[in-house]
Length: 523
Ligand code: FRU
Image 1 (cartoon, rainbow, N blue to C red):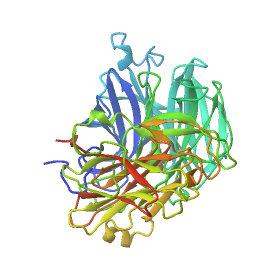
Image 2: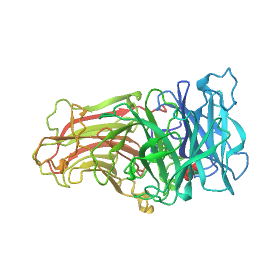
Image 3: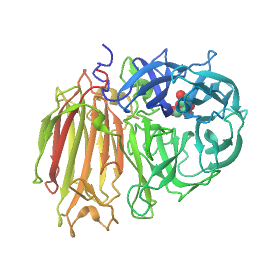
Image 4: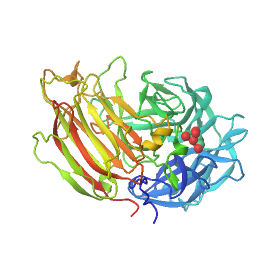
């Protein structure tokens, strides 16, 4: 049977066989979420790029469809891009009989040995695509790729963002019909540059809480590879204004979406219903993706994420709005409760047997009582170990100053890690919000000096969630204020089998814990 290998995630999308990288063409059409992706149909390493295709009604249960777009010539690749709904048939590609929300236009980069040019393909049935042969944007150069288009309400025309990869620029074009494009502006040389820019995404995100609650604001995300602070591939973003022609960031702070190493080529869904923003990223890293020990496939997409913007205190090293990033509607997944605490007393350390198909949602609230002098040993952690007890992956919060969350995979899959120096052991991110949960209610507020030390004042609460799925762990602090994504590979066909929740130096209290086994989406 398919999708049963020990390292095969059960609630994440992966192709049946062979190599996948970036998500492409994310669009919601006629009640269906489309996921296209960079796909090599002939080998389990990157290359020979096609657009693979899958669809879902709930962002979790995926149905595999035939390859959507294939190159015409050997040595050519259909590189990353996106898709839009051409409601008003501005392209002229559609019959008037095609329902408006089924008019899908894909926008991709054709990679050849001598050029990268931008092309369209269209579909009226959401399955079969017809290419529009001429390049619609060409600059006679390589390193020019990854179109992200959208219908811009501000200027009533199409806009596309493209990466001038090795000039560290994002160039924006406008068009009335997606065929004739005019350059309108550039966003150049902000933040971390790395080796090159890839996969730009300009999209709207609702603000959650604070004075602008419900307002849509603009975010520009850029993928960089190599050159991540933690090595290899990473995504940075800016919050700013889009005036119909130009993106202006609120500040030049560098913000990353994920503190770990396996979250790249981030892309948001076009045409999401409601004023909501959904996105997904490729849960891998170019530093080791071609050699990870999974077979007959390589790579998965991250959990689908729901995004909002939240204010937090201005501080010299950060801006004042951050992207909150949490799993979209996990309740779409069936499952069984393995542990659920009742009451709010200190549960101390806990051990829970992880029975099921290898996918689990683990949510804990820790309390740091007022008057506690926390140090770097004040740790609340989850240790998820293999059935043979020999291997584990760990995540936790460390309440010193700064307070951080971490993922530690040094004891997971020693044979792969030993051969791969870039398979970084441990990654951490700073918890920036005031951590204050009471009955799951988050109170936003200014972060006082030494907030996380809690030596005076009031109790601090902090929420840690880990979604573990055979060979990937995604960690969310305080419902997505901080997120980290790491793959890990247990040796000897082992799967996650036991959870240990521990309190480091007894200064923290574990006040709630829920563990749910999630049913496979492939069953
Ligand atoms: C990002 C990327 C894109 C490119 C695609 C090729 O991971 O390098 O820039 O379009 O992958 O597969």
